[in-house]
Length: 83
Image 1: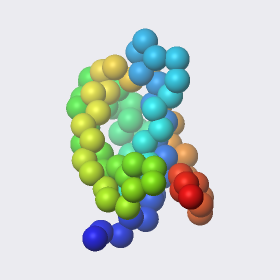
Image 2 (image 1 turned 45 degrees about the vertical axis):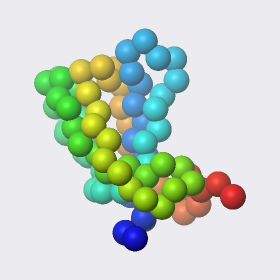
Image 3 (image 1 turned 60 degrees about the vertical axis):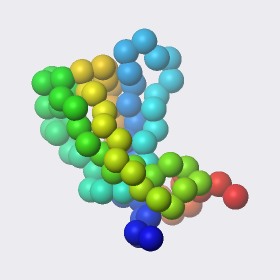
């Protein structure tokens, strides 16, 4: 099993949605410049994420042409864990 240490949360606001998506990232989080470039170019980015309550990371492809707002939040110990 891989180490499931989270690096950050990526919050995305998608066209037509009233709630943000919260992705728990395992890899190095994207910079603000990377996010802006992906959104401007309508890129599809491959992100390594961990679902809440799971230790197994998986790849998620995100179409940034549909993202209207994005922010990266540093993960603090205990966030995203349910008992």
